[in-house]
Length: 395
Image (cartoon, rainbow, N blue to C red; front, side):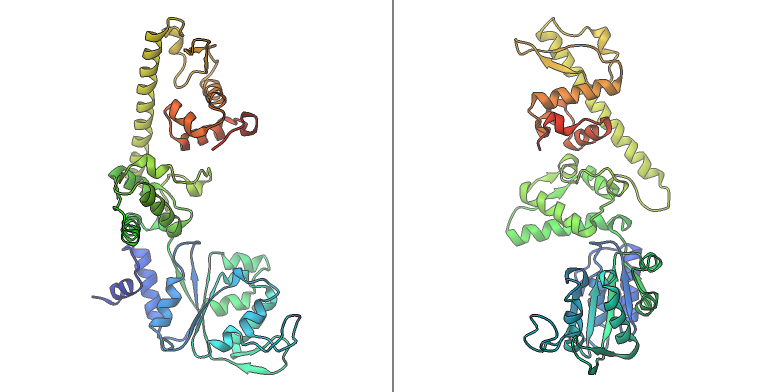
């Protein structure tokens, strides 16, 4: 077993994408050399594994490892947390306290979300990197520390430098070696491997029948951009495993748990610079398949209505509509068409608005009656500019 495979096994890292393997390889190579490392990547992509790898495979592995989330510590106390303080240095400082740099002397400190550090703290951190010296808050006595710093961020630090939010000299000190962790949507088949792993872990932990994923669902997983990365995938899989234990998950069940987000980051589109016609054909196939089903269902409903009541829209008028008719209910409970809209867009807008009012704004029931998914309903509401407030829409 090669070194990278051993690392994956030791830290339970799932995936075989070249970008992931390259990142692990860089961590292993830099670990024995006492340099500062900057880990970059999107939030939720798994950056926290890499400082652990560097510490475990470095000369400091028997010393302390401390992880600090810089974004979670208030600006007024961050200096005290990192460097410690003297008794009476500020209100509430009832005793002298060691900071993380003193506690982890000889070991490794992982500074997560390092871009969130205030500029004054950045200056203190730069001094530690350059000289190994620091001052406790409220003290004039210089102290020494022997520390290795691994930092991580999901922010473009060079842009932060341009905006004056991050010190340029500190950036170059921290980024002696850069490890870029790939986003989940750039890891290809790793998405399916991780989904199966999360499903199996959930089943084992809670003693529930495991779920599986249909081929159509797996294709949708590969197309989705996963803006929340691995963290989002785990959340979705665990919800599916909880409410659909023992089932094969179909595409609609999977899509139903995706957030309604109209930004490009959340769409079911392929990522990366390389144009892949296979993926494009897959997307077109899904579109055609969905339209065909909607058309078949519409024809079925029209035929049923024609049989049930003669006061129904005439067949020649139906041809002027492609998707949905604006429907209302007469006194006998039979659905009839009030008037023929002038355009497809108007037809859809009036149909959806009428259905929402008829169902007291319940989007789930409305989607079922229109024979579309809730996601499609949300998209139509957005595209057609239907005012949710005037329709009193509910979940």
